[in-house]
Image (tube, rainbow, N blue to C red):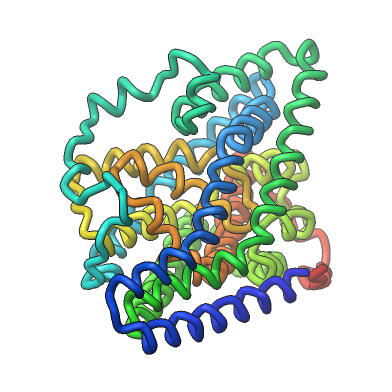
Amino acid sequence: MSRNFTLFILIGMLLGLAAGAACNATLHDPKALADAAGYFSLITDVFLRLIKMIIAPLVFSTLVSGIAHMGTGSAVGRVGLKTLGWFLTASIVSLLLGVVMVTLLHPGAGLHLPPPTGSAMAAGVASSLSLKDFMAHVFPTSIADAMAKNEILQIVVFSTFVGSAMAALGERTAGLLALVEQLAQLMLKITNYVMRLAPFAVFAAIAATVTAQGVGILGTYAALVGGFYASLLLLWALLLLAGFLVIGPRLGLLIRAIRQPALIAFSTATSEAAYPRTLEALETFGVSKRVASFVLPLGYSFNLDGSMMYCTFASLFIAQAYGVHLTLAQIAVMVLMLMVTSKGIAGVPRASLVVIAAILPTFRIPEAGIALVLGVDHFLDMGRTATNVVGNSVAAAVVARWENELGPVRGPLDAVDLVVE
């Protein structure tokens, strides 16, 4: 299925490029070009609406479930505190690295795209956002209103309270927790359904962009992909260096143990597909089952290093493309928001688009800018998903070392066969 999906993405890109180039070459009137691009964009608009449709229930269910499963007790609290401390540090580094790299590389500079027709998100409006307004807006007055408006941070605050209360009540909320987990699984399934439309949205996004901007836009895509993968390599180096400082020379064995799960994640663009084999690889490496089974699932909601770096990288790329200037204070607010919102998104294909779609309106950045990254998002997703697996594996090994639960290697590190279904 994943190989066919990748093929469909490629076909969609090629057909979109051909259709856009044909329209750009044959339609010389600017109004006709704009109209043609608008018709292509209808498909992308439907896709974006479907993404918005799943934001609130997906964030609520995954975040509540993840927090509730943390449990209570001193041992769990100690391990949880160390785990979340590592996750928080890794998250900050990932987000800030994305900001630094996109600022240095400027992959979106020079496009000078006008705001979409009818959009009130002019470039200068972003400066109206302040930290005071942000803090006042975080806390909901009504969760129903927050979900209706897709106020992502307000949903996160409410979900945090619900998940913490369920963890404190324990068995008395077991039935409710099971229901929330079923909702999470349901929303993940719906997310997969929505993402199956991605090839059509890719076709429309590429066609609309090339129709309006010409084939020269492809140079921008090359700069985006190349710059992002260069940033990923730097992030890998930082994660592995941090791991080496804690577990020492055994880091080489860890890399050997997780290379196949990371390849599964890269080829399928979903870390969920690699989860069972990552867990098996960590236990073979010597991480205790108690630590591995606690840290790894938690990491799937709280430690998506590659995805978080992509969120800042892609968001600021879109801002650059539309000429939206953000001050340092506003970028700090964006990092803070992404730090929180990314914790409610599971490692499913292209879930980062959901986070970006939720964050852009806050900074008056046109949501239609998602179309700029949609065409190559699958290929970016492959790299960031493999990074998520590496980050969570390093985190599990580090916490196991801190807890003195990193034992000897328990079997051949190549025993995990590579199977992509």
